[in-house]
Every structure is written in C-alpha cells, then in structure tokens.
Image (cartoon, rainbow over all chains, first blue to last red; front, side):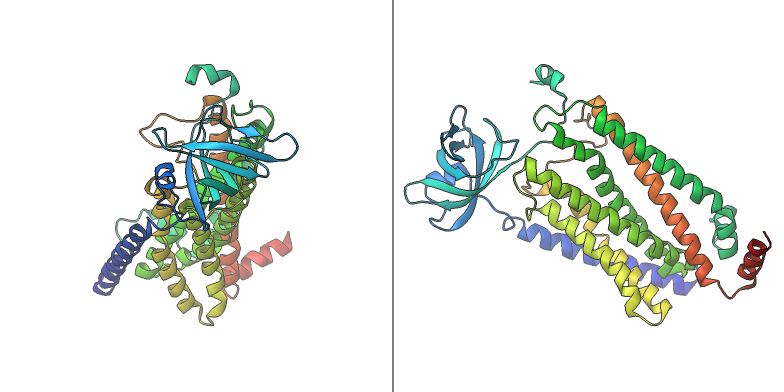
Length: 139
Length: 251
C-alpha cells in the first residue's frame, strides 16, 4: 500500500471505531427506557402509575383464565412466580399463544382498585420449535 | 497488491468480469430458485405443525432466512465500501449498486412476513422493541444507499458518500444480532447459534436450512447478473462492448 492509501485506511478504521463506540454507548444508555414494562410486584406495591397507559408483564396464573359467556371479555391473573399477582380484564381477540403459564405482556390502564384494564394482550413465544408428537419428550 | 490472487485481479477488469461471470450468474439463479421451491414446498406442506403455534409458524421458513441474508448482504456492502474508499476499486461500487436493492427487498420481506407472523402469535403486528426497530433502521439504511446515488451528479462523489454510509451503518448489524439478548424484547432469542444445541426440531430444521442456502445462492445470482449489466452500461463507449454487440448481431 502506498502512503496515501495507508492514511486513508487508518482514518476509516479510526472513524468506524469511534462511531461504533458512540452508538453502542447511546444504545446501552437508553436500554431501560425503551419499551419498559412493570413487573407484578411493582404493580401490587403501587409503584406503577394509575390511569395512564402503561405496559405490564408476567406469567398467566394456572386456572385463572375466565371467559365471559356472552362476549369476548376475559379475566386472568398475572404473576411473577413469587408472591405478587394482579388481575387483568380484557375484551378482544387473544393471541393464539395465550395460555396458562405463558409469559404475557399487557398494555392498558391500571385502576385504583388494582385491576388492570388491558387494551392489548401480547404473548411472547420462545425460541423452541417442536412438532406435536415430541411434546411429551420435552416437557 | 501482491497478496491478491491472479483470478481476482483478472476479475477486477470490467471486460474479464463480464465474460467470466455469465455462466455463474445463470447457474446460481437457477439453483437458488430450485432450492427455494424445494425448501418452501417442504416447509409448507410436508412438515407437521408446531405444538403451540400450529400452522402459523411456517412463516419461519421464509422469515428467518430473508432477515438473516439481508444482514449478511449489508455486511458485504460495508466491506465493499471499505475497499472502494481505500483502493478505489470500481467493481466494489458496482457491487454496492447491485446488492443494495436486493438487500432492501429482503429486509422489507422480513419485516412484512414478521408482521404477518406477529398478528396471530403475539397479538400485534408491530411493537417498537429493539429487534423490530433495528431491522426497520436497516431498511432505511438500504433505502438511503439506493436513493443517495440519484442526489449526486458526480458518480465518483456519490460512490464515496455511499461507501461512508455503508461502513458507518454496519454498526447496526451487531445491534440487530444481539438486540434479543441485550434487551427485553417480544421477539424471541436466536434458535440457532454456534456452540449451542439447536432449539428447532430436526424435521423443521431441514427445510429451514435448505431455504437458508437457497436464498443466499439466489441473491448471489441476482446480484451477479445485476453487476454484469451495470458493468456493461458503464463501459458502453469502450471497444470491447462494441465488439460484443457486433458479435451478438452477427448471431
């Protein structure tokens, strides 16, 4: 490489390293703010704001899903698998992955009565892909 | 430049590039299309449904490969941008010109198929989580690479600006890759990684890997074909192109 090329080479390497570090630091700094959701213990202890649109998440408690008989309303409880549990009311279509024990996030407003009125229910799916006949082998 | 092999040095001249790549452009496109048909039909018709997601998981067979290969193409574009800035290799710029629309299409494809998949399984088509947002940024980067060329009247300055954007934008690739590990995302973490047993059952893995290879090969074929036409357009006033045209006429 001649001298001019060598200078150009190192200038680019330097600029690339500098800008990568800048962007990575910025990304890590905003990490806690993007798409933050409240955990069940924060909801129960009153750390989550009332009557404002927030997101909360947890696992669906076993046998807690109660469908209403005449409309699309559903009631279920979310837990952190420890001692905090809160009630969610929702009207609308549930994602097909929604089931007991499933990690779920809800978006909506927390009432002063401690009931979370959800506008949106999202179910997270994991990285495992298993055909039905293998169900018993993996669980 | 003593470390560059002879066949690569030969390929860096437009005339030789045009003559030597004709065979490969056709073969890669054909093999890629064939593989894509095999993998997709296999994934859609001959594989059992997933235990929780049912049939909607079949989007995986096109979603994951197109998202992954869109990122690989961006990395290749960044390397080409580096080569173009340091060594002023014209062919590197031609590669960026040919590859950017392909990568852009694959990114769009991954975003749309992801939305279609998200609707039934997550309960929403779009969330602003780290994975989906960084993938959207990749789409805008690709869009920028395509559009900026039209803004400059001087093609050499355009090539320079595009190379800089390509290189700086490459920071986004590790962010996309590790977003699912660094952040709380609705998107699930990677199912396949080096040094980790596969989280995908083998029945599903075979058509998925076929599609991975097929989309890579097909993209390579289309990029090569597109590069050949750009090489021809750029060299339209040279004698070898005129000779080539005369030869075609006589046939």
